[in-house]
Length: 134
Image 1 (cartoon, rainbow, N blue to C red):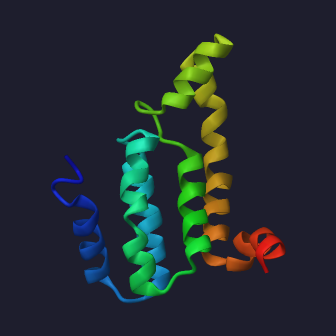
Image 2 (tube, rainbow, N blue to C red):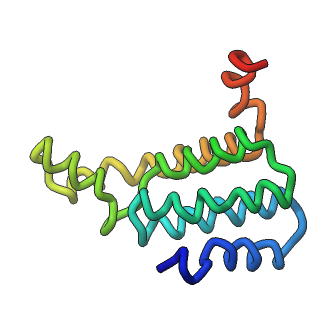
């Protein structure tokens, strides 16, 4: 349904109409993908992220850097009620969701800090790829 309604194209158009500053666009993409992650599971969450190549093309973001930002955002994982990996992990370890969430929430700020480091310090994200690919 999202693809048929051209949701990714509409979001790209909306976000690019707000500003032309690449740093603010990167922040808006991060906020948008975090917001989407609260309501949509990871596979569907990646669909708007994959179409965010339009952001990269419009603002000349490095493709590896931009992809790493999206991947790190996806690794933070969706929040409940959709966090399927959270539920699977709790089921496998026979741990109640409430107990697990008590330990996960304090880790959210450091994870967001890593996302910001990957997004705004390109060397941080591109160091290892540059070692292998020059």
